[in-house]
Image (cartoon, rainbow, N blue to C red):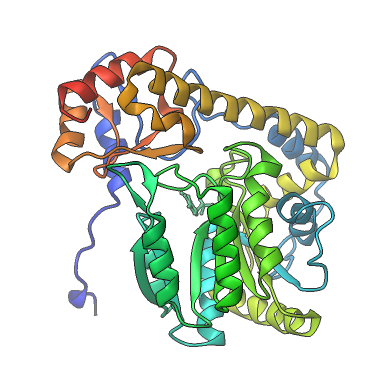
Length: 390
Ligand code: PMP
């Protein structure tokens, strides 16, 4: 049986973690792994989450099965945060809790495959490296178009336009709702408006990946583009992750929401999502989503969470400003958003950064700006200059 298997390459980020951990130099900088870090390099459990977990521990009186939809209170409480307090999608939503944003993307892909086998998904390049494999694993076809040019650090909007022009009605377009991974480059408001109009006119289906709400410009601001697109189209999917904005990474907290044309189609879609979840993971892990639900149920914990999110966002954007101030060649980093920017560099240059300077980023030049500690900007810039990246 297993003799037919071909060895798969190890996850590049895991290799990076290993190399960083075994580096014995006193001063080293981890810009690799995609998690938020505080000024001491830690990724702490949020105080609001700890408080909710304490309540959960004291009040949870059973761990009996909840069902494939997961914690319905969680998905319901998330709705106004993602879609707005006065959204007009009521009755057209089919939502379900998933194991992280990854689970939401995979379940959405499975739903698309069930609805129309072999559906084509359009991806801008570069994108999160897991997007294409997730969609392919569900049997969908992938077509890519340019999204951003790392040499200019700008959206390649002609490339995006051409990609959308090639798409056929019913094709799916993957869009990062905010804080693009890996580039930190988001569409401008006018670009979003054109995209929304094009999606609607050409009957393309947006699949919005919203994994960093609140880590860019604010909770409302980071949902602006998602809401604009959803206002314009009849049908859409939204894959949501609470793993970054609630710091719940390993607890795997996400949600998939499908926006259908009407209540009848939404109800049918919900039964399909439940059936697909049943054969994938039966039901999602409860703990993290229950903690998020408890935070969202209590105004005091919501205020605490928002304040912690403000601190995370403030630190990320201060680090961006520090890098931009340290070298005019990095000025673009100030205008980018979220954990990541993607510097233009070769794999050899990224290896030289770690080998010679103990500064770790991915082989493709993606840096996690939250990995910097106060005072690191100077050393990072010096290393980038020394290796010809600036
Ligand atoms: N989408 C994007 C763009 C991401 O960056 C990530 C996480 N790296 C995810 C989805 C998946 O998030 P989760 O850890 O919740 O599965």
